[in-house]
Length: 189
Image 1 (tube, rainbow, N blue to C red):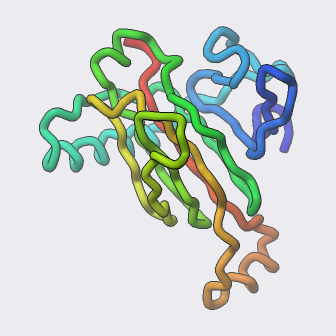
Image 2: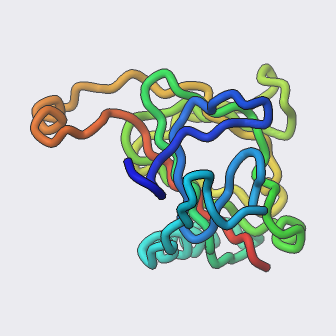
């Protein structure tokens, strides 16, 4: 993809992450966090689509019916990660946003599209003490409030399933099998 599209970011040691990423609304990367406005290719992130904002707001409103203590938030950034089979994302915390929002527990909304992923989460980096959940296409995961600073990561992407007719659609359209995750959050507070 050209400037501004998906790319493979590097971590502080220079190693490439095992996923492809792009941002909407505001740039984030593993090294500079939110410090820079432009990627290394000189491109600025495209605006955050209204549909993404609406999706996050509706998901939070639905969750608040079951969990009253979940704060509302207005997303101003979306980190889109694309995982191919074999890709993963190590344990981390989403805590680079404004400290006022973190202290209030403003939620992170994570939308899964495509292949299933083993998602790990908990209050420790010890993988033996973490919970595991299978995230499937269409799942929306929200963590906020007291759980805002949980450690989480993607252990693995499950092998593609041969849905009825999917292999033909992939062949005809040139689609790439994998998992797209949209992570929506509020940076400004």
